[in-house]
Amino acid sequence: MSHVLITGAASGIGREIGLAYARRGESLTIADRDAEALAAAGEAMARAGAADVGQLASDLSVARNAEALVAEAWDRAPVDVLVNSAGIYPATPFLELDATTWDRVQNINTRAPLLLTVALAKRAVAAGTAPSIVTISSGASLRSRPGAAPYSTSKAAVEVAMRSAALELGEHGIRVNCVSPGFVVVDSAANPVTDEYADAVGQNPLGRKGSPEDIARAVLWIAGDEAGWITGAVLRVDGGSSAGTTALPLHWASNLAADDADDAAGADGADDAAGVPVAEASGAASGSTDATGVGA
Image 1 (cartoon, rainbow, N blue to C red):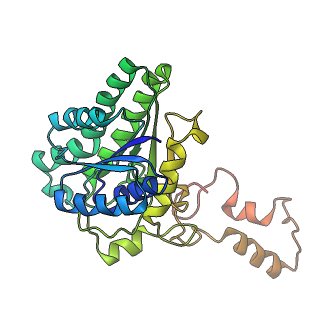
Image 2: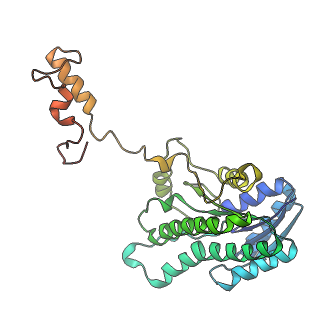
Image 3: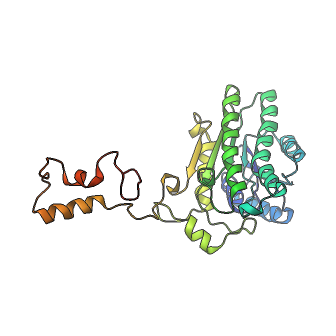
């Protein structure tokens, strides 16, 4: 039986991760700033089969609370898995940004996971244990979006911080990875989004929005023994959205243009009089530019 510490466990992805570990019969310490929602989540995890559930109300925007949280969890039992799931996602237009808004997002989304990881790693190294640490990142680390400059920055930064942790903690057997969700539909008022936003950002090659269960399965796998030779990784669980977008038409129907030209000339893939393929003669050669001046 493992002891799992999960932040942001009162709702959304963090709550589902807790439930997934509970169904395995693990011992849980769950943390969140919303004590009432945390208590309800703890009851649900106990019903789901957790061996025991400790609840710690904590505001991780306060730096000293990270150390205190790990200390209290460790006092219950050495921590085998840390899941950094707490995060905030305010929508702030760029021209309205100020230091207070910026710092709050960085403090919760980047500084807190870093300090929690340091606090746990110190105890683990001293005790000779090798916990697994998983931090929830976001596809916003790869591309920003309107109103999300602080959030996208925080998620890009936490991925680099976790890679740095993996590099330095590997000699102690401590694995550190990130799971990066795409758009996930959650039943939570903590980070609400509009339907318009959800429809736009939820597009991906697999054609559906994600669920908290999708992310929980990924976290349990990468934290577990089956992923024992993986550290410093970012596992993108996003329906393929990080591969690119399907929300665009063909930028230039070059093949269609070539086929039309061939048909008009009565040719079947023949070259023109100069011995140059029709598509190449029409400006589609490698390294040329189309009418807009964009490289083909």
